[in-house]
Image (cartoon, rainbow, N blue to C red; front, side):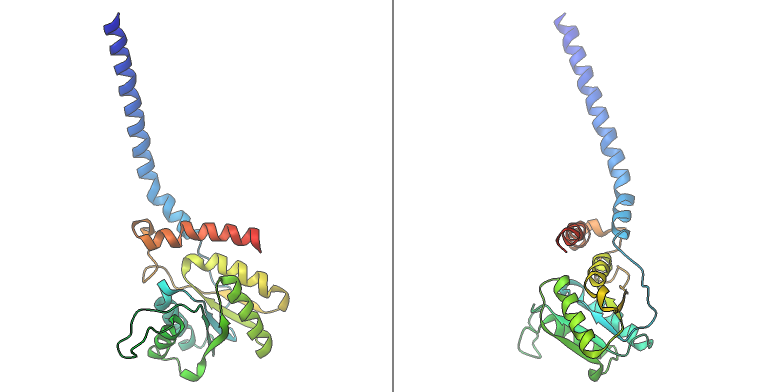
Length: 218
């Protein structure tokens, strides 16, 4: 009898192990497409072809792709002015300057190298600590300068939250806002493989957490 009990327990254990292996295989097979869908769900398209200005939101990890994308918008005549926000964050050491430049200064350098004239670049006053802060600064500038439309450039995975926030803050002012994000793949990891990079985990799952917080907070 004891041998039969042991054989039965062993069979049940083997069955559980097979079920776990099957579940793990199914999870592994489903993860890449699910991760792609999650990433793509954060990206929104642009609703405006032209605007009075393009606003480049702060973001140290993707400042180059944002600045270059904004320069392309300017070069195509879609906006005559490029606005930068200042998050007060400093970049790495710059030997030519003997200092750690602010990231908005780095972004301005990228704009200049990409052909945007210095007179067409403005830094919004005040240090911002969040996308909501940026929206408030943008609204103040738009009202002071009588701007009626804006193109907002940010990382692709932040684009849904940026559009929601900008519309929330600027909606009553009558300023039309379009979010035009560079496609992921340069500094932002591609939608298909974001989960292979640490930055991807900050930009995708982290962005869903931020989006939920913003909806509840603002």
